[in-house]
Length: 52
Image (cartoon, rainbow, N blue to C red; front, side, top):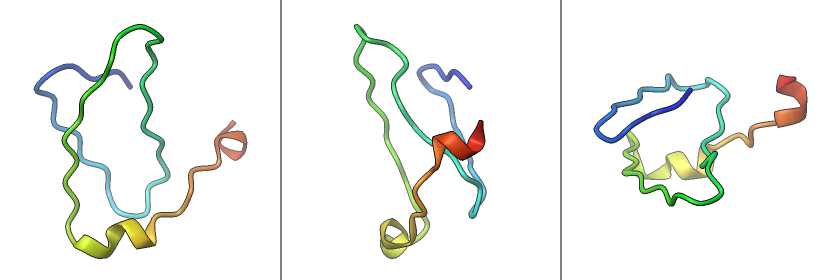
């Protein structure tokens, strides 16, 4: 999925996902909001190989 300036993205809890910049030359800036402060402690690493 490609996103542009001003886009809002909602990812439901428990949905595997990975966020990365596809450009080798353009920087990306994102504002990330989470429901609770401890959500960072509950992140399950995305397994790119398993997603195939």
